[in-house]
Amino acid sequence: MGDFYEHVVFRHLDVERDDNLIDKLEIFLKESIGNKYGISSSKILFTKRESIKPKKGAYIDEDRTFFCSELVAKAYKVLEIMGDDKPSSAFYPGSFSAKGDVKLLPHASLGPEHIISVDKNDIKDSDEDSNK
Image 1: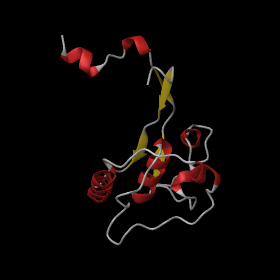
Image 2 (image 1 turned 180 degrees about the vertical axis):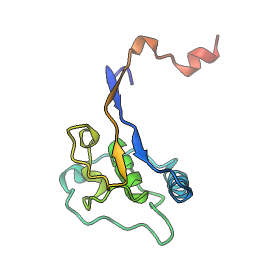
Image 3 (image 1 turned 180 degrees about the horizontal axis):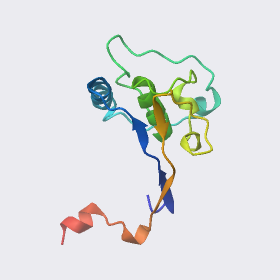
Image 4 (image 1 turned 135 degrees about the vertical axis):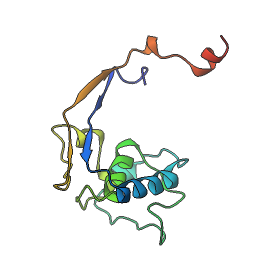
């Protein structure tokens, strides 16, 4: 992170975490872990396209790629806390900022922005640590 960003912003999601929400999140995580990171010009330019529905019984297809904010938007949709009908690929990091356009449903809200400073000199390579 330190090579690309000087800081990141964190916002707490305030929503009741009942068993149904946790179950959906666990399934979504199992389906999305291991999928490749992917952003393409078609995702950026053609955000008005119809969302492709995954196979029956799944939240996402095995070969689906995501970029960071797209993954968060898809998770919010799966958890039924975001009511926006735009495709997940239409959301960018700024969409989740305090000035962003994310439309959460009334039972969910995002807290204030917390800035986390990233100093690349404080980030250590895990291989370097294991050799000590």
